[in-house]
Image (cartoon, rainbow, N blue to C red; front, side):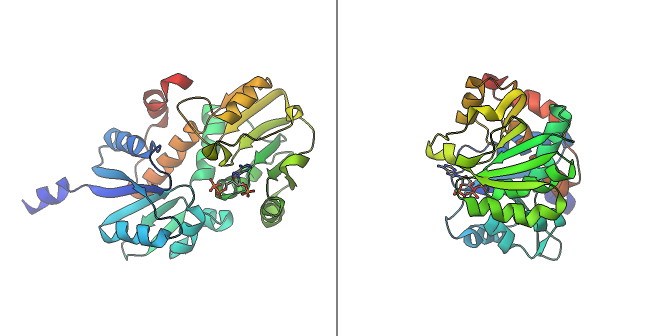
Length: 283
Ligand code: ATR
């Protein structure tokens, strides 16, 4: 009897962010749980702005097992955890928290793995010797620089509204590969093979002004954001003739699958999940 009642108790997970209403993570993790036969619950938490520890502690005190962390808390989550994986250490940002058996919180970052899996497996992009541009220098960018440099691109440029943030990231990762920084209005005027958009400008309905010459005949434009309709960056890319235009839904699925694997030890089928969950308007 005891065993049966224990089996029926689902393990508790959540995603925390602010705003959070748009998050698709509960649907994704529920699908992963169905696929793998795991019994979990997964909720959305609207985190207290400037008080991440309060919201995180409240969740874990109520028996939470693991948290996904999204905008704007990835840097606060980095400071909250007791231990960090190398991915999280290098990224300086945490998007997944695992409560360990001894009660310690382990922080890791699955964004980079998620992006790379989507670029390579789903989109079949090879990054060796390619020119990459990242627009934005926040927590999302910090999470993807190391895995991108590991692919040995010809160069990686980070452009940001606030120049010093791009410079800080470039300095931090400079031992790992060819990395440059610039401000948004001084992006070197050349065509890039891959342009990754990683700002939160669209969340404030602010349109970025980017030079059209950065799009060449073979450019893939990838927005780390996802939305049920084309994002402003995707619309801009289309207007300027990009050949491949993608939103961050594949990355979202892949980073979620990695978190799920770390929590439950089982790998979900992301191809099936992509077909099942991808917003119909973007297929
Ligand atoms: P995340 O964790 O998602 O990266 P973040 O750390 O808050 O979020 O970073 C947001 C990024 O979006 C930053 O690069 C930010 O530029 P600044 O460093 O200059 O703040 C960028 N961003 C936000 N609003 C923007 C806007 N209106 N125009 C241009 N860039 C913007």
